[in-house]
Amino acid sequence: MSDLLARTARYVSIPSVSGNERALADEVEEALRPVSSIEVVRIGDNVLARTTGSRTSRVMLAGHLDTVPGDASAMQVTDEAIVGLGACDMKGSVAVMVELALRGDGDLASEVTWCFFAREEISRAYSGLLEIAAVDPDLLAADVAILCEPTSCVVEAGCQGTTRVEVVLRGARAHTARPWRGRNAIHRLLGPLEAVRAYVPRAVTIDGVTYTEQCQAVGVAGGVSGNVVPDEARLTINQRVAPDRGTRDAVAELRALLAPFLEDTDSFEVLDAAEPAPPQLTHPVIARLVELSGAPPRAKLGYTDVATFATFGVPAVNFGAGDPELAHHAGELVSSDDLTTCLDVLGRLLSDR
Image: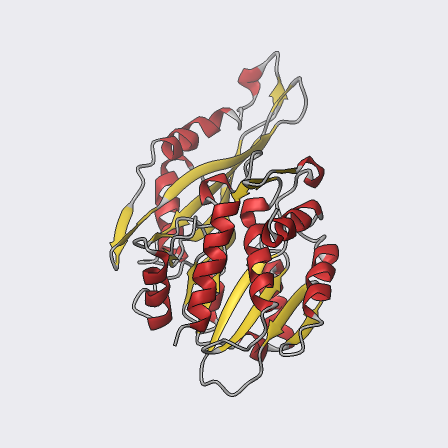
């Protein structure tokens, strides 16, 4: 087994569900501390390693340490792949980042920061990147950033924004033996659910890559007791937003979609909103990454911290090991070939002059 595959297996074996990244952060820090040519900084459960020479530009490689909930002990290891929670999203790429940092600064064309951060898989308000920015924003300064999210080693440009709204529909309680005395709020969900089910995705092409928006019901709640007509029902909806517009426009569109089913006593609340980020394919480092990858770029359909770096004024792109279609799946895996390709492409990019 290669050192890179073994490192990936080690990281996958360490549970790091969001909010519980300390053991993995310790492991990454311990690996990087002995490298004399890089500075290592620890902020909470975030680890940054950075060169501190006099090169005129800086590239950021960033990746999150956390996973969605699951059982890390179910990992399987072969010479071809690692199967297990977080293998694809994104401990394989974290292992690649560590391997690159262990090389030190000897053959680099620019200064480099490797940023391993916590709490990406939960609400953006808890993001480790925001924690770092609050403590020392200079640590996140760069001319360009590469988010090592799983992309099958293909450049995925920009990212879609995301909104999450909750609609509360109200009725009147009654005994289920005499439902005519009340009004069933759960039954009122039929209209909004059908409207969301019938939603036609909107597609837009920007700089040659196509973003396709989505709208899905992701939560339903209601009910008082087994013999009570419910007087309240809640529907949670998630919408993905292309980078040619903002979340405010998307929320207004969603509000209009649901307006025919809402009454004065009902409510519509935005629970979460994260803005999209446009592609940055003309940036010379990103253009070179596309060239080295050997494949045409595509749009990032999900939300990533490319958008967070955009708020910092740093052009960013997604590139990493692992098939994004497998992220968060029970059979999540990353192949040895993908890990090797990711290491090779990023290594060539960082040393490219």
